[in-house]
Length: 464
Image: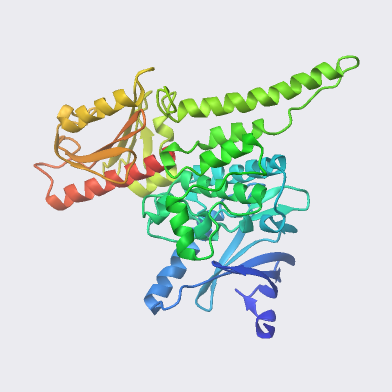
């Protein structure tokens, strides 16, 4: 401890004292000698038994992910300022926030938990819009500042959407079940962790607490959480919906926001001689808000008699972030050929492209009609959006409710396509390559299928 206390990281950060430690590393209070300010520095924990090459790869990946997260700026996010390698480990420099972590404040009243949930939802939505998953939302990573504002910390293990499903970074009691199943993680995975965090915050115990780590994993995968006894019925409905083991059935962020906001007191304007009546109307607004919000989510999530999750066609041009398009096609790709139900990105330097098309089942027909239409498409009815003839359709597990991939034999832009169904929405992703004479070689066809599958995985994760 003494030798560490006088050591400078990157020639400028002087460690003062350890503030706490967890599975991902140790957090230090440090002094920035260059800017003369107090900061927090996280010493990332490196897995044991790594070879020098594996250590270099781990450090490089951790630095890259932390730098990506460092571009996120929001009042509900503990800002990352710097990432430095030191003694073979990555160190993350961030804001030193005066306050207390949520795990030291619980249990809290339902209204306060709803406020905290809205703050953390702000942070997650910004991260997801930038193609980043947090992967470790839990009470210990929620800081409650002295002014009462809740902030999400520890973006140091954040990862791009669609990162390796086998990556087990995070805390098992707050990890979504699909991550243990090695399925693609997406925004619904972070929202599940938010639900587990809010459960703990109001109940004072975790929804899947067990004495042994293996038992925790089994509970997350197979057991339902105990009934919530401290939470109000409205908060319990939101939290238990977030903890659904099927990511496709969890409410999306906008629905969560609406429901949490409806749990807060409505502003009441007090006027002479009409105070009592206006207060009554304010209370009624809260009650109606909870009911309407839950009803809207049940309609959108395919409840009894509902037409499916999606009440309106999503914007296909918002289905991929620019960062994801750059990953698929290379920097410099532009969106063009926009229409109501499709969007196409093209890299004019080499001619590669990605086209995304959406189809929504007619009102009242719901998932049944979408399932029948998808089966016809799978049987060989062809794609949409001018994707050309197809060949070699194969099922593609792990993406949405059902999916398949096929080669696209278009002579102008040969490539591959993936079609998948999420509730009552059908999505087609076509990856086109540069035009070439004759049929593309097998290696090129394989690469095209992999690119189309990667794009579909990213879009599916974004749809939730």
